[in-house]
Image 1 (cartoon, rainbow, N blue to C red):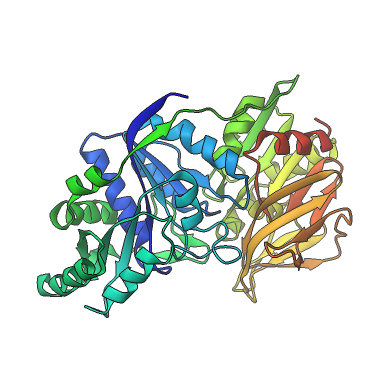
Image 2: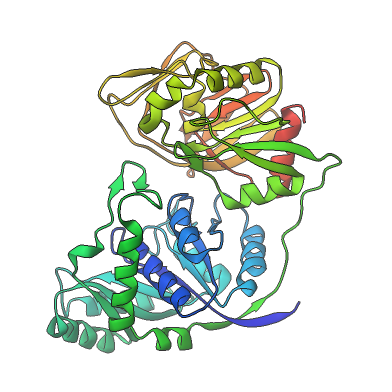
Length: 439
């Protein structure tokens, strides 16, 4: 295979909420400002961070997840996309070694698999020289991880940074700089994660982060220590005798999609997008895809679009194929009940309501088996289903540790719906699912 020398690294942290996303977005903007082409990646199953990556880098961000997909797929995906850019940045998930079981599927597992140098982000808001043993531990706990440098976050002053720098030097970890404590860097979030790109002042915040990075982080040194050789390769393309017409919902209410899924669908046919919020008619399609999103925030507007709601119901009743994930599934129920107790009528395909009145987090990887297929994905929601709709008993969902998960699959003719965000980047899985839906 051909090799190419590029910049590539993974941004990780000792724990969540250390500043990984802020630093990732700020660095992406910094590189873009310097005229470099950036290829973003996200470790784990998150679908909101990649939307921010894509907005800034101008390149679709891809998930690197060795639990939802096999290692060969992840390696091929990285080796196909990274050589096309000047800099590839993978944003980590949770703490560096936090995985589905021990460090399985963690940021560390991705760094090992792809031989990526790790840049550690440490929240220094309430510490000083005590970061020395922390850094020493992260450097020496796993010798297969190349801890290439540290950037400190929420640093109070230059004198505070001096303590931190001395600690890093004594721990044997190169210091790349810091982000100061700055009120302008607060990104708002809602119950499933960050606000979406374009909402609030997120873009302005990223510009501030980039400005501070240029001032306080040695970006040239970062580029110097993260050069690596990448073998060029290509993902296996799906094999099908047909070309399908595929319609994907994409608007403010429905927009949580894995880019790898869209790539495979694009290989299988022609994709058009439509808006359940704003359109009154469906595009001509063999398959409709209703991804997750925030339908509860737009429940009133969805309910008022009676023509679209009826068009969706008629489409399913005609026996055509439809896949609905999480928010898309909620849209197929009778009503969405907001946390304030307001009820909004949806399409009524399934006999259940989705309620946010007693919000409770349901989170985790899911392995779904049944009806001759196995699909992996991720469940992440706060709602509860209320109603009489009978689940498809052919399917059984388990967690990453093999325990049974209460996550029903609903079927009506060739409509397939569940709370799970499906990862179907491995081409054979989506082909098998489509065959089960009559395609």
